[in-house]
Image (spheres, rainbow, N blue to C red):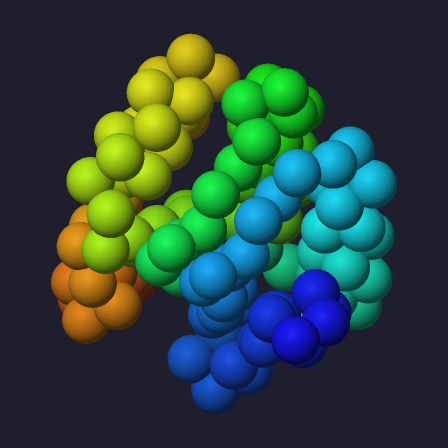
Length: 131
């Protein structure tokens, strides 16, 4: 599966779904490719959206983890109302949570897609009430 096909914007729900399942993120080139894909999808949308990212069986090489987490932070600031992640691996959830804390980001990380979607629905309702 090529990297671009892992990104799907659901215009009806206004959610960007990203599927990093079974992906190894191991190079700065991949990080830059992810940045280009997100920029290319989000700029034409013209407003911030929620994102749900599947990290099931995903590995992020420790050598590029800081750069990857910085990219996540930049994407969140520029394009995201909120990002919710999920993974079936405790190690991945813990690693993402620690990276988010280090970058001073929310660490909304769950065990399943259903939990992630439920959180986005909750955030959307809260956003409507406060907006």
